[in-house]
Length: 447
Image (spheres, rainbow, N blue to C red):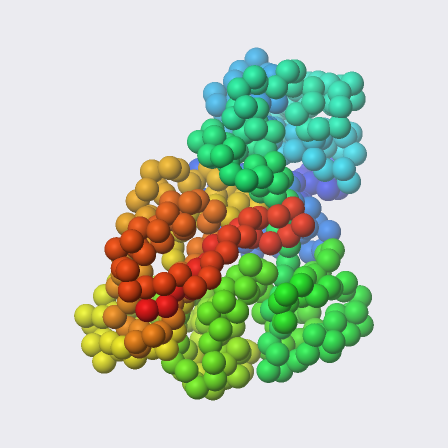
């Protein structure tokens, strides 16, 4: 839907909102949020503040879908679920700005949404959008600071109240209330994810990298307990244009994922298997920790995604990484020469991704209890199939980017009960935090 504005009406501020609306429409029709955003940015390139605004509005409105629907239900004559999709997602765009975007004046949120309705063949519904958004603005002016203030009393049911406040599906809200700090989890799920870097300590130093970022006007800070970890603060622009990228001084990797490589603790000269390796963030980390001495075999079913491992390794100057497109569950049968061949194995298992909801805006609306139930047998099968590839006394790290017990502690408890010869050496569960960092689980096992 390419909307060229009339010459007599300048489209000030419409471009990023138009793009965000297109992303919402695509995700509503089944597209993945990151894929839809990248596709729209390729079709209609935006720079700087416009690009940042489009990203914030698209991802933010997707995350807050449940709360925004509640506002539509409260203000509109037609329930959100029965609204025409084009209007529903456009109203989400306007409501998100009114409720969450402190940088956007309320008048701009309303006027641009109404203008998009007119230009998007929703002209007859423009008065509806105008009236609904203005009604929201009036309620917000008389209510408290929270984005649900003005909706009326919150549901008396704890899970319904929690799910509405944090815009989580009902099943996940009920589950999260059983976890150690559900409020922290809910807050973290709706924060823009931190931008963490892992320095390639074979090519740079923390002091050198910090100096380069400071000289470029970019604020960065070291990450505690991670020798090569930095986090970028504020806007950074195009990543490939940042100092050190072209020279292989760093790559993007979340702080929790960096801790996984440290737990495996590979040594120079060892032979390491990284199962389910693409796109290669952990493979390259293992190679760096080994001083680029030894062998890291990166295995993944997707040949296309596996090519990214080679590209990343080349940029970082790592020659000890080898790739193989294969099903990790079949390696023992298809590669008999690998039996008892590896000193250490990393299994970053396919999982529900419940620790990365802030990073993947639409994930909460895709994941279901049924999909998690289907994943657990695959995770266990992968773990079992890799055991014969380890040397006697070798170590294996099982890791996921989820916080669901069935995929983590419960799975390992069942495994250890069935394999008394294996020991759990160390494990940790990191919860997503509003201060930054994905949720991750990792455990080191030894035969």
